[in-house]
Length: 412
Image 1 (cartoon, rainbow, N blue to C red):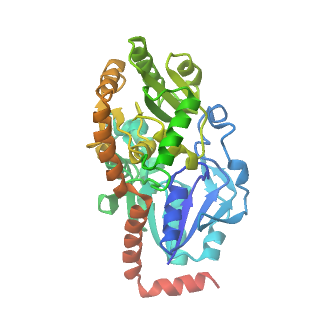
Image 2 (tube, rainbow, N blue to C red; image 1 turned 30 degrees about the vertical axis):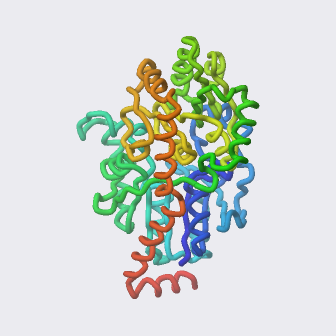
Image 3 (cartoon, rainbow, N blue to C red; image 1 turned 120 degrees about the horizontal axis):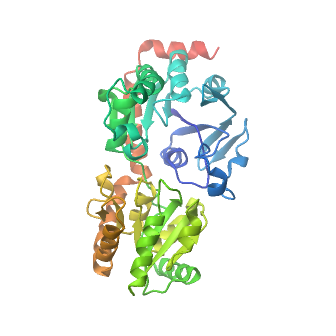
């Protein structure tokens, strides 16, 4: 089997699906290719330079480059903007040269899946899509509106209709969470019968609890370097310091606890517009982004993980490292925190303080954290890769007799 994953962006320093899933597919003996554009994740945000400057490795993505990376082959194509969205230049020729049996896209809408559905007719591969858009970042999903609303109509024209056309040629689409699946069906044109919830994963080689003396020593040394003592209860947040992520709310909660004489400290790993306000609050320490291969050390040096607004893959990573996690009460992906975390009322700093205090007890942290670390074994990228491969093999098993002929003709 030859699998191609099409991704709009790619970053070696970040542990996202486009770099993690193919790593474990390759380990399972599958010839795996990732085709991407010369663009970094989040290139579209207005404060990209301030947030990711110095950490962005997109300069390494040179159009035309082909390299072996983590067991799979990475291909970089140039990009162009068409009708406001990015397209891959030379996708047809690249697919022809690889000759895939399976093509997996990271979204059900956009130029990449739309063109992949067209080229399926030419090359005869089986096409799969995915949806990682949560309700928290897609306002229409949580806002009551009539179908004739201007915004709804625009969504129907630019997203639902093209998504429905693409889905005609798709075997299955994977929603990363329940609300991602709901967004895909309601707004992106994916038929309900073709959507399946399949969570994002954790690289359990990197993200694991403290289990050895070496791990413990590394924890002590990193805490000391960051200015924390062993008696401090360190709460960690990783990601963008942006208004939509709002880690500043956590900093305020930590600062309030510190003012009350309670030894809570805050560790914020990342960067963004809220960096200076966070640094100004007592008990809070900021640290620049670190490569994914080093990130597990920071979780193991902390005691609690917390993300106040939008969902994040970092929740899974922290839980895999044995940390209890705190999220807001609107989160739809409750499987991420059931038995290993607490909820607080969204935007309510008093309720966030309450949740932090509940985890001030080391026995409570140990109970929730241990359960979470065990549960994350089911969220490992290896487990998810095996699940995807079952679907890919099932799709190939019902390949029509004409498909092989189409692929051979296309390669002439």
